[in-house]
Amino acid sequence: VFWLQERWKVYVNKRQTIRDWLGPAGERSGKPLRLLLWLADCPPSWQLPDAWFHPDVRYEVALGAGGELPEWLPADTPVHRLPPAGDLRKTIAAIDESTVLPLDLILAPGASADLIGAARLESIRVISLP
Image (cartoon, rainbow, N blue to C red; front, side):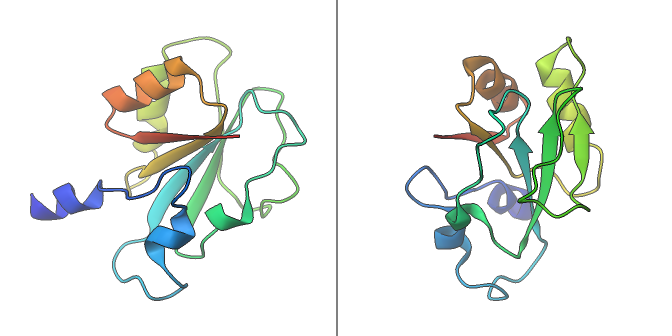
């Protein structure tokens, strides 16, 4: 139980980035973190700020049906296609359960209240970036 309590303590926010929390690459021991970039309704020009990239994090992307993987992400980045309509909480839960590691964090440009609420019900933190 202790490991689970520590696992979901994500000490980041808009001002304290993933780099601030994890420190330099390779200093962190243990399981890698899993971060979902929610780009479903994102403008094509948006890009994740450099301060949110860290080599100890496994990045995945949630895209709408017609969305394309941004050029600034590696081609082997796992992509989750979102259904055009449906239960947002179930969609997040399915993405969370798609691999052994749990989702630690969702980053979304201009996160909607619906996304934040659905993720909260799954105990996953959402950070809305400009």
